[in-house]
Image (cartoon, rainbow, N blue to C red; front, side, top):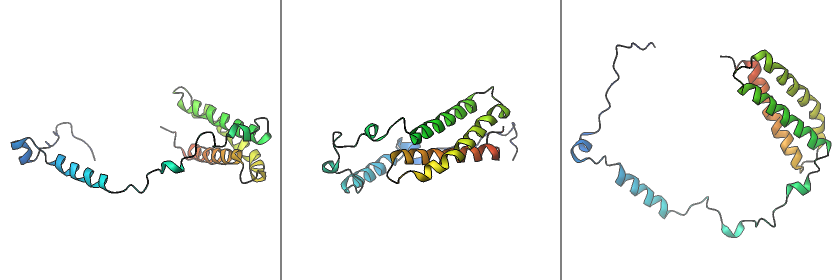
Length: 150
């Protein structure tokens, strides 16, 4: 549909009642709805007795060895993803300049897949690495499908 510059936009008029009284009628309806919702018990409310105090929460820093190969793999993949993001945000970068970063993410993804499969289920590093690999897969797919072509 083409827009003709000679056409003028349609005027949006307020309802006749609002023109005469200055009241749109929305305030009482909203107040009624708000009052009714406040009377209901919130199903999703947090029970203050079930909140875990910060002293009882596990500290992930004590559970993760940052020198371990799985942590180094996750950190390397996050670094590659960050470098790729920086290239995408650079207005002077061309797709040819971004392509090596995509290739690096592909290499890391292939090499870390075996490591990911060997990690135990409860490992917090496994969750980080798994989510990062999913994000990397989506970005690689977006790049190859042409999402970033103007």
